[in-house]
Amino acid sequence: MNQLSDEQQQERLNDWTQKLTGMYIAQDMPEADYMRVKERDQKLELETLPEDARAVEDTPWLFVVGGKKFVKPSLLPFDGSRHIRPGRPITRDLRQDRINLYSEDDGKITKIAFF
Image (cartoon, rainbow, N blue to C red; front, side, top):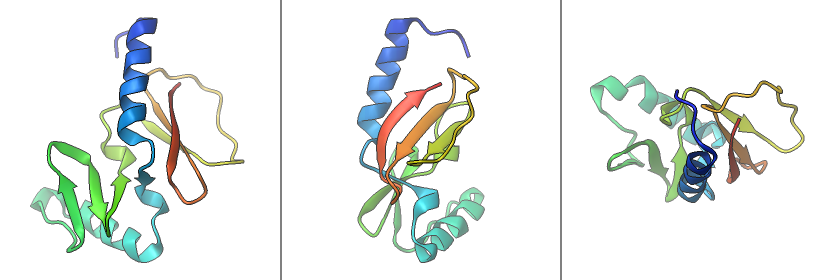
């Protein structure tokens, strides 16, 4: 990825903060919902979805299960993602091209950062 100017970095941060804050990270769904999403992921090439999941048009990383919006981090358009939970340690390697998703214990995204 090309080096972004400070202004471009701030613009990207603001854009993705607005898009993702308040949504849930898919890996933190209850076990039953997680299994349905896992099944969906295995069938992406067949373009099938679980009964209660709706893909959001033009947004392959976002889908809806039971009325809640979930983010699938591996499908975000970045070179890596990291889920940061309260009280959990993180590595100190800095990568401008990686999105960091901070969440509450229930997986609800509260903050976005790039490092």
